[in-house]
Image (cartoon, rainbow, N blue to C red; front, top):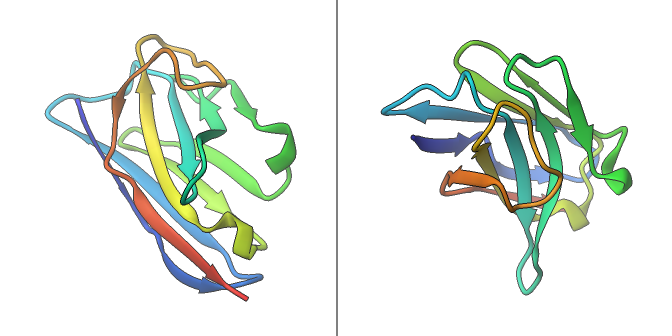
Length: 121
């Protein structure tokens, strides 16, 4: 499975973005999917994850309320509201080896290349 994250860009603080994650070569409809982000000089952090059928989701405690993960038959989405300069990072989607998810990187076996989100103040 190859994953492609898209939808990043340069936005002003307070704005919103909707990131998308699509799979190629093989569907990821049976996999849990997570979103992570990595700011320069920092570790990759968990943001949110969703189960294979969308019936279960999880969020990092510090990010609840501004981030929403969802999926349809083809893609997984991450909506980000009220963007802040500290949200600036490369955002990655990843498919879990199973139908559900972890709230940390272990267990995610397919990773996209990332999409850059830059928030200006």
